[in-house]
Every structure is written in structure tokens, then in C-alpha cells.
Length: 336
Image (cartoon, rainbow, N blue to C red; front, top):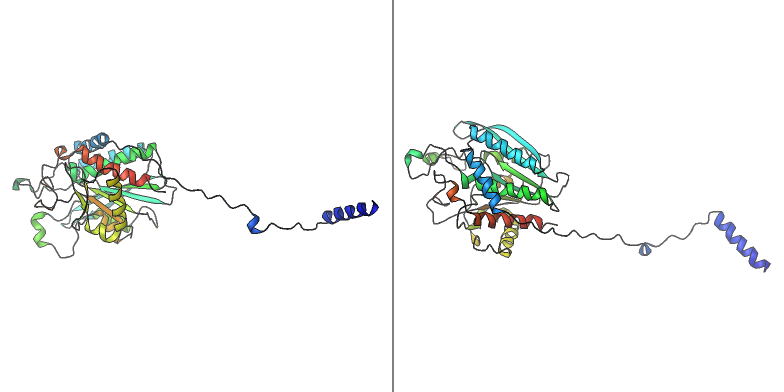
């Protein structure tokens, strides 16, 4: 009995003197739980809403840089994006066009979840061409046109995307950029004078790519929308998109087909089109694709309305807007 008491007291003394308890082995430690990020259910895109956004842009008249309609529409876009909770950056600069015209350009950047470093880029150009230079009537070749489809449609779709982003967040941050001075390229009557390799289009995106709104800006990928409103549109896999961002093409076209829009998004190669996505790819090295209605059967490659006075609301179809808008929504909300 006494010996047992002595041993018990000895053990208590050793513990009290700080004898080090045995450390747990690494395999005995509980593993840190793995949190799997789930995709977010995509909300329903409203073609009616996108249509009204396009109609509102057209109501300002042609949005040619330096015009009153251009300034008024730009102010409207900024106001709408701020109303939807975006952090808006206005990138203003003077750009000299091929013919010497100095364009007071404004790139409009809307950042959703700006604190999220993992981002996706959506873009469209919001300016309109100063000349209806392929209009059947030569009298219109130096007149501006409404620009409902070429300019207005992509912006209208992305304004509806912005509205939905204000209601339901994605797992990634989203940047919506409205590029300016895209459509001030060389007049059709002067193309024969063009210098080989000279690019006179997409001036706003060129400026942004060389001077991004955020130092070191990067995104997983980009999607450009241009001429996405015409009835019966056929979106082929554009050449530069295939070259620089085939995986993004497959992602978007796959989403379109799963959503039932296969008659709009064709698994056919389209021509290589000089557009804003080229600068995003070449300068910033962000894989960016172009969703654009390319019509090989048309004399100008796009449709009878393209760069003519006919480019008005009669060439905007809600079924096409729905196909494009819901596809983009499905893609960005599927990101983990």
C-alpha cells in the first residue's frame, strides 16, 4: 500500500515538473475538411429586358464618338451599371483614327465582386459606325446609322447580364467592358488604299489592352458579343477564337447545345474577324472568343443590314437574344 502511494506521488511530481507529454503523430491529427465549391444555378435571362436595353440605346441616335448621342448613351450605361451595384471605371482617352479624326473615347468597365481575384471578362462595343458605307443607296455612304444590331445588341445582352448579377452572385468575379471606338475603321470606299497589316478597327480595346484599368489585370477567359440580335442568326466558330481560345469556344458552344440552342450555335468554322477580342488575345494574352453572326452567303459576310441604314430595331429578334444571353448566363454561373 505504501509503495503504491509512493509511486503515485512520484508520477504527480514528474508531471508537475513539466515532463513533456507525447506529441500526436501527424497521422493522428484530423484532416482539414475539403470545401468543394458548387456551381450556382443560373437565373433565367430575359430577352424582353435585353430588347428594351437595345431600344433605349437606339433612342439616343447614332453613338458615334464625339456626338451628343454618344455622350448621352455613355452616361446612361454608366448610370445603369452603377444601379446594378457594379464598381464602375470610366477610362477616357483621345484616340486618333486612321483618317486623323481625334475621337474622345470612353471605355466603360463594370466590376462585379471586385475583391474576387478569380475573374471572367464579358465585353461588347457600344459605339456605332459613322458611315453607312455599304448601304445600297450611295447617298447614305457618309451618314451614320441606328446601330441596333451592330453595337446595340451586344450591349443590351450584357446589361441584362448585369441586372442578373445584381440579384445573384457567381462564384467568380465578373467584369463587363463596353469598348468604345471599335467601328471607326477605314471607310469601305477607301479599303483599296489600306496598308497591308494596318488595323484601323477596335481602337478602344487596343487602348484598354495596353492600359488595363487594373495593373496586372487577368481573367480566366473572355467572351465578346458583337452583332448578336438578328433573326435567324448563325454563330460559327470564329477563326481567331479557334486559334487563341479553342477551349473557351468548346465551353460556350457546349453550353448552348445543352440549353437547346444548337440551331444558333453551329459547329462550323467561321472566318477570322478583326474585332475587340483580337487585342484581348494578342496584347493581354487572355483567351477570348467572339460570338458574332457571320453569314458567308451575304455579300458583306454579315447580313443585309450590316453598315446600312437598315440596322434598326426591325433587325432585333428576341429569340436570338435569348439564345445568346442564356448561353452566356449558363456559362458564367457554372464556374466553380
